[in-house]
Image (tube, rainbow, N blue to C red; front, side, top):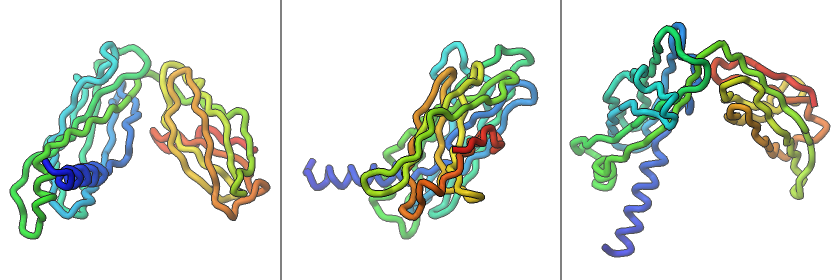
Length: 238
């Protein structure tokens, strides 16, 4: 195979992979009781119709696998160029399971499609490569309300004169990690947004560089929002 053809295939694969966009990027739902449910949007940023086969597989935690309780609908998702598709995941556990985290793996595998009028050979070939995108999603059981702290906050100026805020997000929630959004606040305005998942009994370093027009004196605090339901779980002055 020639180098030119190899490079073409590389960029074809790269463009196809980066064309896959899924929102939200997590499950993070309580799965016991009435069960957990979330809708996902898949964007098709190519100029070709794409079709995916959706399958639930066991997660990484053998003793905490929730794939056997998980359903995805539809099983086949077809998305036209420049459009969005929606799939739904529902989890219903037995009546009594142990508190804590569980996980599963979602597979989105591309399926061959007949070439449509106006599609290029390259894009048609991309679908035939049958990519299998695997995403690990986490849920939890038990009344485990999020308990998060933001410690050691530092507001500084970097070598380029931009304001930087940093600190440590500590998860004190028993038995579950927390997927959260961090907003830097200036007065009544939200300046920045960042998604972080803090593991069980763990912590994550947080650092963000703000826009050039934001001064150190503008920063008044941060808020941390639980991405399970968008509730604010911490509001802290700085």
